[in-house]
Length: 139
Image (cartoon, rainbow, N blue to C red; front, top):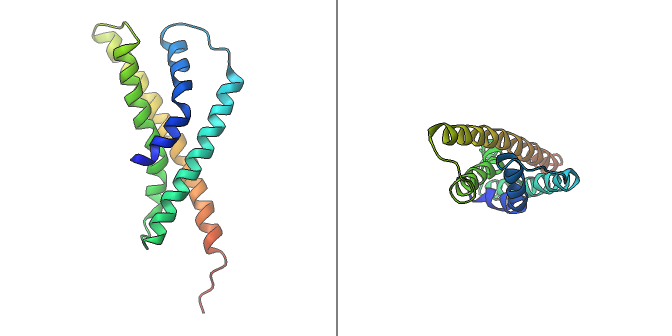
């Protein structure tokens, strides 16, 4: 759960601008910077997941595949918590329909972000595990 803190830290400033452009009807022009933030998110997610898998393998725990997925996917939980903060502090939405609309879209976005980050982290850790075990020969 704590492994998602570093990838979230690399994107939370950009999340403010994305949320502002989406929920406050402002235009977002900095797509090149968003691509750079996405690349940083992917690199940080892979690195954090590799460290988590390395600690699991050092403890001789063979259940690394799901941990590698969940370690990166936990970033979406922090994004959802940030969206709750953004809703309470930055928006002026009131009423049941606006609240349901906001949180249903944020839940869908966070689910997609969790799948994306989890997949990136899982593939990165799978490559890492194959790389470190490819030269081991059982005699």
